[in-house]
Amino acid sequence: SYNDESSSDYVSKIPTIKFTKLFINGEFVDAISGRTFETIDPRTGEVIAKIAEGDKEDVDLAVRAARHAFDNGPWPRMSGYERGRILSKFADLIEQHIEELAAIDAVDAGKLFEWGKAVDIPSTAKTVHYYAGAADKIHGQVLKMSKAFHAYTLLEPVGVVGHIVPWNFPSNLFAMKVAPSLAAGCTIVVKPAEQTPLSALFYAHLAKQAGIPDGVINVVTGFGPTAGAAIASHMDIDKVSFTGSTEVGRKIMQAAALSNLKPVSLELGGKSPLLIFDDADVDQAADQALLGVMYNKAKPPFLDAYYIFTNQGEICVASSRVFVQEGIYDELVKKLAEKAKDWVVGDPFDPKSRIGPQVEKRQYDKILSYIEHGKREGATLLTGGKPLETKGYYIQPTIFTDVKEDMLIAKDEIFGPVMSLMKFKTIEEGIKCANNTQYGLAAGIITKNLDVANTVSRSIRAGTIWINCYFAFDDDCPYGGYKMSGFGRDLGMDAIHKYLQVKSVATPLHNS
Ligand code: ADP
Image (cartoon, rainbow, N blue to C red; front, side, top):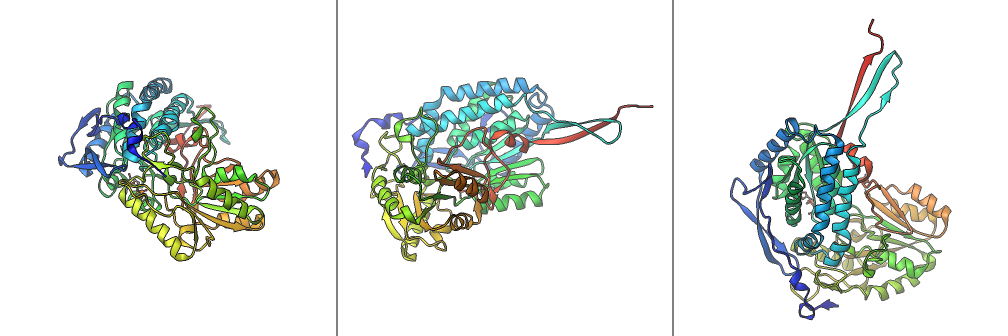
């Protein structure tokens, strides 16, 4: 079903767009070329704003500012405590602008406004708070040398960091990358995705208000092959942290290798499995498969349970492959078909909507072509399978049954509201199915049997395992991939170490 715009007054929440230029050395500036690009409202396909289109020479300017701030500025030199205080202020300012930021991501990315207010933006602020608290707890070790030496490690900020961010979580991923690198004492150049540049510019403005010195945070909006590629191959960037597709991740690594051998960390695609065992409660399992479960109870009721269709399926950890043990397969399929009816597709500002539009026309077309492919390959359509007959990039939540592991829909990351259901018999077979992918980002297990949960969680090659829950992200839980889902971890204290160098220092104890 679809919520008609005329049915409520939610439209009034659309924000005024204040920041559309590059943020370099503490100022909003036009691109050197003077060029702009349009950012599109996925609810309508119409232009929201014209954004400065940064390219190589703008990246050069931003890197120069970041380099100067790193080599000569106060940021890496102040105490961790002082950096933490400023980052806390930044987090507080984000908290004071939750509604505006949620509205910006809703028009730019098609994300549900209520969701943004309740989840995305508060957790963005929380991530900044987490790393604010970590800034004064970064220290090396005292080492034991075999001779009479005093030896220790110093953890030093790696330098100028380039962050390349995708469009599906413009706020959370911004914080996940930016906050630990700033806590470590680095200075940064951020390139948000061209589909969703608006909130990153707003964060830059708040960072300045919080007292983060000029040049420490620079935001260059623009396209991947130009601005993004300039970051990856820049000779004066010391580290690149990337989240996005596996295909582009490969290019980033290549560019780093061909330029100054900067270390990279890559958080890439996924095709995460959810294994539902016979002993599961079918009703709950169906909710988890459809939606997953939120731990935090202080959320609007419709956010209590969510999953594959959450964020329009635009989640790298989406449990897009659901394997159900044969004893409850039929019952679960029935339940899913019933429950999927509750998933109202509609305007992200309408509180009744549970699925908004896909981020852009290109993704929308790609998802629809995968759905067509699934039908042609012989999978059975249980629900959905069609776009909505309205303007904007809306797609019905789609569940396929009778999916075979070698079908394209079971192998490729679709990044849309499309679930593939498959059957398995034994635990061993379930593990084999789960691991039958080039990716290894996350996996879910639903069972009451502790032995099964323990065995399976240790056997799946993925960076995150959720047992009887899904999407249980938290600032202290490191997050990243095995296999072709990339390497390096975001979140947790592990993320800080991506932005630090380890230096060993040794001196003799007796200088005779
Ligand atoms: P998606 O396919 O989900 O849009 P991408 O991997 O294409 O994801 O994009 C993620 C981020 O990487 C975006 O900020 C995009 O602009 C950037 N990007 C795309 N191509 C390149 C490239 N060749 N070099 C550097 N960054 C790129």
